[in-house]
Length: 271
Image (tube, rainbow, N blue to C red; front, side):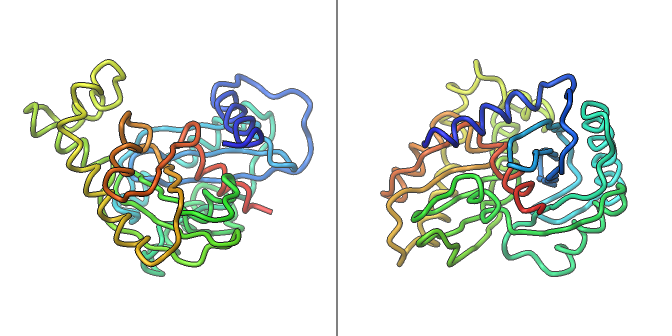
């Protein structure tokens, strides 16, 4: 992981917890990531440095499809207000993203959510391409393991030449945990995120990780992929990269906090 990427991700961690911003009055670049598990908003300065961010768990999107338009709009409006309070100024426009392969109507739905929340939608980009705006990979595969889907982008000479998206992600890990422990989905989600519980949960969720690996292996077949870069919140589960490496035979890495990479990349497209 290069030094610039390390610095950007460290700035993103700071931005999420920053209580207020002093002084910056330049142009803003805003990105909204409507994920299956988390909706995330990041505000960057003109140069792309994270200023402030906010994230909240919500089940308003399923497998890249907006299933609760009213709830999604209300959540984006809430997060917008939250970061506006920190910035001390209003947000007027933002970029957003969609999983590759979703229908045109669903791509439009993400735009309508932003507009309903009081934001002009100035750009839409597929999620793995957004992630690579941060990673700056010249050659390799970006794999965005989100809540409901796994998105794959093949990058050659710095350009995305192939994208795909299939169901299977963090929600499936949670469902397996809930079934194995006879607990509710909400309890399983909390357990999945508990670092002290993750080592004993690993054998339970490994088959889901292996399925993700199988999906990735199928889509990278035929491309000269030497490294897989894992992003999306699910990639943070300990052992995920090792399983993907084992299944695909290609080294997989998790750069920094994988939950933040795609929303940061979305904001970079808000020119």
